[in-house]
Length: 371
Image 1 (tube, rainbow, N blue to C red):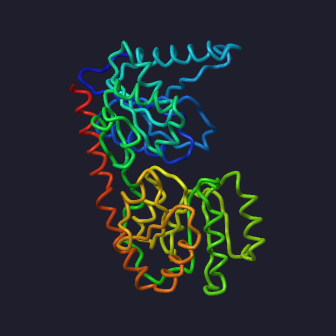
Image 2 (cartoon, helix red, strand yellow; image 1 turned 120 degrees about the vertical axis):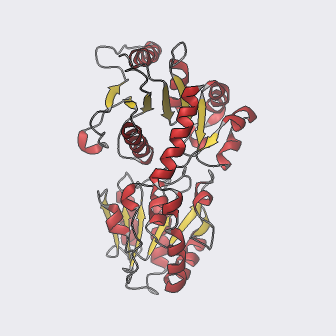
């Protein structure tokens, strides 16, 4: 497909558009660049049922890069070779000036498959780098291949030190923009006696710890409830845990909902108890909503990029149940202090406003394409 005149042509490469943090960032960026007059192509390995995916705006082309049933072989080696060739053909056909990839092996594939094309690969690490590239082999491949990318995007200063000096010098830090639905005045009325959390129900999110902390404080704060928005494999375990701790009638797991901004804006407290994260979109949105927040200090540095402890939220060590109980007690027992944290938290709206952050990405992309 030929480019039209001097129109800039950008591709995004990701596993799928399944509803998750990185996927939402990519869709938001794609929509922004389309509005700015760029031709945009979204390349994904897989396609999920429509109701499970983010919807691309009209005019953004979607290309599936995985092998279809007629292309698959019985050999894993042959299939890998065919995937590389197919992705290479996509870049040759679509002719994007650059491609932004993210998450683990996708970054490797973008670098390798754009060789001998005019497409400049930009890789990005959106999660905890040590988890995206575990073990000596993956770490070594990242250190070997990333310097060959046209650009490297990281989300935190702390994450740089996972990589070698060459990558550290080349990498830039670009934040995610705030979802526009969270750009609004902070709710200033009487807050609901609700504690909320948003995230997949898996072991990494450590919802078990927040349920245990809530149960420890249940008699001191008998009117409060805990609602965890999200879905995942640990739902049966968490439901059983709440029942065993005697808080099943006050702990709610409503699953994934479309209007989370409305559901959380009047809550008294937001919790993030993950062992690891990149820069959590759920945390960004809670801060932007002006909620009093308690978050664990994740290894990537994502929390400290967003929160100054005691100023716009509280930070506790990951997995530290006593620290969580103490912090929850402090905020639930002192609404004036909690409210002051929430007011400071809401100021992140200006810092991560889409019109500001998206233009940082645009400047960087234009620089890459102009080289």
